[in-house]
Amino acid sequence: MLGFSDAWIFAGFILAFFSALFCIIYGVINWHKGSSEKDGDYREEVRWEKEEIDLIEKLP
Amino acid sequence: MFYLITFTLIYLIITIYLSYLGYRRTTSVSDYMLAGRQVHPVTMGLSYGATYISTSAIIGFGGVSALYGFSLSWLTVLNIMIGIWIAFVVFGKRTRKMGKALDAHTFPELLGRRYGSRFVQGFSGLVILIFMPVYAAAVLIGISRFIEVYLNIPFSTAYLAFLLITACYVIWGGLKGVLYTSVFQGIIMVVVMVAIGIYTYHAAGGIVSAHEALTKLTPFIPQYLKEAGHRGFTSMPAAASPLWWYVITTMIMGVGVGVIGQPQLNVRFMTLKSDREINRSVPFTAIFILLTTGIAFAVGALTNVVFYSVYTELPITAVQGNIDKIIPLYIDRFYPQWFVALFLVTLMSAAMSANSSQFHALGTSLSRDIFEQALLRGKSIAEITIVTRVGIVFSIFSTLFIGLILPESVIAVATAFFFSLCGATFIPAYFFGLYWKKGTKAAAKASILSGFFISLFWMLFFHEHESQAFGLCRFFFRSNSLAGHPWNMIDSQIIALPISFIVFFVVSLVTKPVREETVRSAFRHI
Image (cartoon, rainbow over all chains, first blue to last red; front, side, top):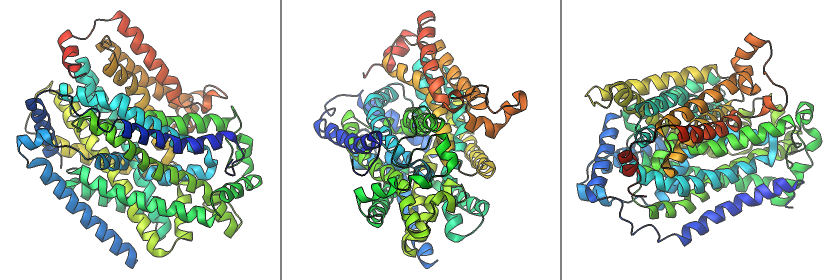
């Protein structure tokens, strides 16, 4: 078991790699998904961004 | 010293330049550019990762790994599955859509507008304002312990000096253009951590040999740890032993689950333009976490092998019990001087990227959430800029004070404290806000208040690691905890989070729903 004496540790070590692999596969499968949606109109995006810039301007 | 000054200067010049560049690009574009601007997935991955992973993970949790061994591999699993996949896919997508729909720019504002409650926004901002300096101090202690060991100067001097550098950076524009600087900082972190990982496994004889050598060190583990349930660096602690409860519920689950309620991370989703950006960012962020925390925790455990082979003593003995010094001592003793200086730059990257986002959250909590919404009831006045600056200076001073009074071996504990507190306080209202239209304003208030106060009560009177430090339980009841094993070892989040969930659900069933137009507006892109 890769030199580990406990199956739980072996599982945690392997699962760390598998969870990263899972995220990679998720990203690849969904690489083109979520692009065609229309999230509000153009004005809403601009309004949000301008407010955000205003907030940043108030910071030091 | 030559390497230290050269690397530090190069790092600071590049960081300040990128900060200026990022700020200019943020504020000087047309409406058309604003609406179409996309964040590259690698940029998002590195930036989110650099904010998430700080010196606390490398120095604090690296030191915890040196003490408890590979048990912390499970924290890497949770960091990736909960901290990345669930955070991005389950929470992030809806946070982005709802944030835009409600025109929310801070995490408390998202909650406040979702439930139509100024109290929710103001109180959440207050929790951040009061308790985030504990986490900011933990991050600064991380790098200060390294400077203490590396330059052989007192901890308080190192802490003051680095806080001064951070304060200058923050006050002279470090909070603007954070996205670009954190990408640069993230790249440094990955490169150096990979180099340390390769060197450590090589020095310990290869992957399997290193783990086997670590297993053979079990007899040398201090007796007090064995009595608490330590069964070796490559074994989990004995089931249901005090150490098992502590490692699982505080070290692994405290941070692993509590990350969902982190305000400085959740706001990042609102800056994205589409779900596609979130989908594409997931792999890069996961790889970043694996290469930084995964390596830090493995290296932490393996310091035992490298130390023992040279000094025939475990690092915990070499640092006289202060686990925050284990990684600094390991780097200082076993790496060439130029690399030690480079590691310091890595820690600066990790500290500054996390600190920037923390002070950003602190400043906006005070100005926007507490001052503008809760106190001025939505009015915006010119003095807010001044209030923000005062807020950040106040935060820097409270971070200074907290950092100097905290005891040794505290980095991971202080981090877990803040993550647990945020988890129990915010997660139910956040989750139901995104997914359940019938959640009510009263339920959000009750859930946030119960999560917060039960957590505090548990920390002060039950969970021994905190109650012992505060001393309130001993003062009133002449004992460090009101209950014995295992309750005195169970983290507050394990108790407070389920209660906070139940409170939200039950109160929602019996109270008036949120105004229909507020709910319709919040869910209009979902």
